[in-house]
Every structure is written in structure tokens, then in C-alpha cells.
Image (cartoon, rainbow, N blue to C red; front, side):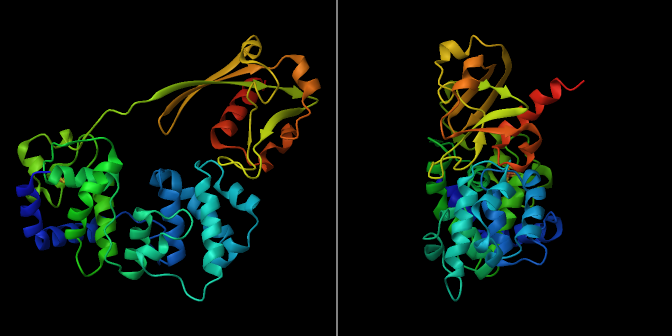
Length: 350
Ligand code: SF4
């Protein structure tokens, strides 16, 4: 990054800090984890917000706090209940890690207070550790994620091309740390996040209303949107063939084994392989839905075909279960699968 812009920014850091914090104190969105904040609310919200937008998280957060109001309640809850409450948010390892984290905290007299100690807990990386400890314990730890990288790359008009956001985060971490004020570091971190979420948009940033515009080299140069420069993502195309198989008012689903890395104990429509078919045979059945979704670097096309009759007769694998259609709601289905099943069932309702 251009040293002169970064050095100028650090030299003006008290102006930067007070402009940012002053703006945040007036314009911060009212979010449930910011009202009467607690360590528990901060931890739950930080886990839910990993890779998920605020507006998606809001109803989940409210339901979660009603059902599991503190670490003790979460630690004591069965995993099936935890996963059910998380259903639809995706990336279920977050829910399992949060559950294990609550159990680890329940075994201690007091919670840890430093980022290094928090990073030893399940599911807590450098960003989450910095967010939790700066907000809850005033730790001097700057949060650096894609939002912060975008703001700092624009403030310094950094034209370096980075492989991805993670490698850019490493480069910007010292600058983020240098800009952190000794007082209220948690508010500063939240203000940076808020600026990224509500003003310094990826496209069409609202520079005219930005509290730190006077310190922004990218805005001065006239093309802030061109920062940061990230190498285009290489997306890999994949096709998954699934089957739709019904018998006597029940739907055949695949339940991932308890030790599965992804989706443990959750249900999905079976793949051709789960149903004992080759893909070539499965795709001969009527195509009843084609869905696209992106997971990390994969662009996945999911094709759901009506299963041939032999699948129902031969569905004896222990990880295949028949679920009565009127009991689907009680089951933990991964989010997209619940939508697809509901959509397919709705289509044939008169
Ligand atoms: Fe982002 Fe514009 Fe503010 Fe610079 S002036 S930080 S580009 S919103």
C-alpha cells in the first residue's frame, strides 16, 4: 500500500478516530445485540454474523435469545435443539462450535479476556476474538475483515492486487491496529463495521456523507470503487443429481451421520449415490427442479429428479429415512433443501 497515504492517515489518527466515533454514536443502527449488551449477546451475534447479513440474522437472534438466554442454557441444550434453532442460517459448524464454546465456558469460573485465550475456544478465529474481547473487555485488538479491508484500501488508495480478502487482511492488520484508539476500542471496531455496512459500500459508496471523507485518498482520486483490487475468484462448476422419492405420504431423506464434517445429523434430499443409482440412471427420471447455489468457491447446480420405483423398494441404508410429509417441520433440514421441498410440495397443491 502507498506508505505516504498510510503514514498520513496514522499521523491524523486522532482526527480519524473522533470523526468515526462521533458519526457512529449518532448513526449506528439499533441492533438487538447492541441494546443492553452482554458477553453472551456479543458472542452469539458474532457467530451468527460470520458470512451472514444482519437482516438475515435478526429473526434468528431473537428466537435464539428467547430459547437459550445465556451460556448456561446453551451449554445444557441438546445439540438437536441447537441445530433446529440454527436451521436456515447455513454453515452449521458455527452452531456446533458455539454450543461447544458455551460448554467450555460453563466449565470455567470466569470467561477469558484476551484475544489469544478466546482463539483457543471452538470456532473463534482472529476476527471473532478481536470483536468479542474489544467489545466486552476493551481489549486493544483491531477487527479486520472484508469490510475493514475495503475501507482501509480506499483510505490509502492502495492499488496492490491481492489474491483474496484474507491475504489483504494480513497486510492491512497493522494499519487497522495503529488506528485503534486506547479508549472504547470495541466502539471503534463496531464503527468501522458500520461504516463498511452502511456508507462505504462495495459499489457506489456514499462518500458525500462519509465522516472520514477528508482523510480518504481513494475518494480524492475520484474512483474509490476501484479499491481494493482483488484477483477474480476462480469458481468451480459442479452438478449434483438428487432424487425425489415419495411413498405413502412420506418423503425419503438422507440424514448425515453424527460425525459428518458438514451437516451432521441434518437431512437433505438424497443424492443419486445415496439412493443407490448412477447419475446416468437418475437423470432419466422427470426433472422436477433445477437450483443453483454458491458454496465457498463452488458454483453448484442441483438437479432434482423424480426417482424410479426401485429406489423406494431398495431404500434400506441406515442413513436414509422416510419422513411423513406432515412431520417435515419438526426435522432439521438444511436451509436450501427446506425451501426446495416446500416449493415442490406447493406446486402440486390445488
Ligand atoms: Fe469509503 Fe468514500 Fe468514505 Fe472513502 S470517503 S472511506 S471511499 S465512503
